[in-house]
Length: 203
Ligand SMILES: C[S@@+](CC[C@H](N)C(=O)[O-])C[C@H]1O[C@@H](n2cnc3c(N)ncnc32)[C@H](O)[C@@H]1O
Image 1 (tube, rainbow, N blue to C red):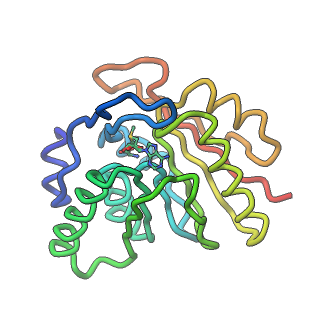
Image 2 (image 1 turned 120 degrees about the vertical axis):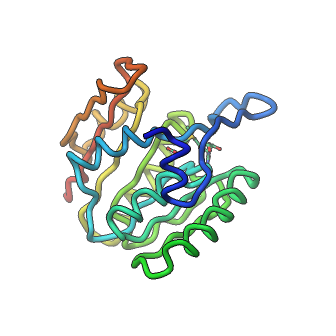
Image 3 (image 1 turned 30 degrees about the vertical axis):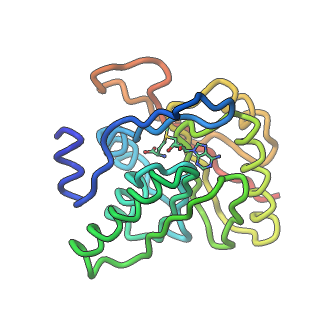
C-alpha cells in the first residue's frame, strides 16, 4: 500500500519532504519513515509497553500516530519547526476525531529536542536522522540522566543510522545493541536502510 493510502487509513497527512530554506549545520530536513519499513520493524520487534514512546524530530507525526494506532501506548513527538508542528497538530485533530475511543495519549511539543525534559516514564526513544551527532549526544545524555534518576527498561531505535550515531552508541557503556533489522525488500534498498535497536543496561 502506498504512503498516501496508509496516511488515509490513519486520517493524517504526512507525505512529502520539507527542506530548510537555508541548509542548517546541525538540523536535518523533514522526510518521514516509510510505512512499509515500520510494518517490518514492528512485526519483528514490539515497542516496550511499560512507558511512553518519543520521536525526536517527529515532523508531521507519522511515527507517533502509527505507533499509537498499533500499540495504544502514549506517544510524544518533538519537532523544532513550527510549520511541521502545526501539521502534526492538525493531524492530531483528524486522528482523534476518527479514533475517539483509542486508549493512550498522543502529544506534540514544538521545541528543540536537546531542550526537551525527558518524562520519567519514557521507555522508547526513536530517531530517524533528525540532527548532527553532537545534538544526538546531548539528547542521549538527557535520556541517561532521566534513566539514572528513575531506573526503568528503555530502548533507543535508530532508522537509517549514520556511522557517527552507530559509533557513538556502540561505544556507550550503558547501551547494548539487541536487534538489527535490515529492510531489504524496500524498492530502493541501500545498506543504511535498516533499524537498530539498543537496550539500556541498568548499571
Ligand atoms: C528525517 S525527519 C524524521 C521525521 C520523523 N521522525 C519520521 O521518522 O517520520 C527529521 C526531523 O527532525 C526535525 N529536527 C531537526 N533537528 C531538530 C531538533 N534539534 N529538535 C527537534 N526537531 C528537529 C526536522 O525538522 C525534521 O522534521
